[in-house]
Image (spheres, rainbow, N blue to C red):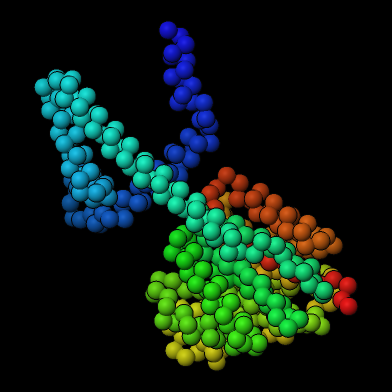
Length: 362
């Protein structure tokens, strides 16, 4: 008798961990509540607390029912009916029948979730094939990048374009996360491929990107980006459209400054100011200098205490490891972010590109 009990116990606990239980209680339960509570009307403050509580439970139950398909909603109510009748009449068959219906419905919901997860996994694989598979080789700079989405698919964007001996590096961020942001990211990539083939001027590329998306982005979405053009002689032009500032480490002074070129994000109602305010910065980089392009997912990465990683920690990592290669700096920065975040779930995509001027230009 002990063996069947042990097998049953192992079935439910073999892959169970304390972290998973903690996640269920602390995070998933809160997320489920927020998911259903979003459809609940605000309580009438003129009523007493008990009445408000009863109304809240009723509205929460209704919100749950409305998330089910109509057919499953009916079957769920039938299951509840049989369970209540069975309880009142002390009829075990009715109670068991209601229990079976609920578990069948649960099996349907789990199957739907797993099917959706499989589709998202496939979408992630497709998105990963669209991202650069390796850093570009440049005679003046060592380049490395890191990309990690907060969900199965993400809205951050990086790409490299080589043309006429010059290198164009783009990092962007579609507001929001998930599938919608990822779909917009694919469109950004497609349009940029076309624009970089058509225009040589950095500002023309970004202005025409804005013209395209000014009528294509939904109101709740916007795009920020930074584009860096490396010329054959090692000089750099940079443009920033509402994106976080570029960090520039100067080896000669061992200091880091923030390059805040003027520019608005794409998708806002700019009233014709976008092109007028878009500024191109020219940078003369010396050997050993480092540029860091990043999305706000790094600075806004939060730990379990809801503290943000911030820009100062990022600067410190660069300064303390400036003599290392870009690959080593990338690893140090990723470790620093992960150590800070700890067990907290990522709240945004984390993406950055590192450029280091080398003394091997031809």
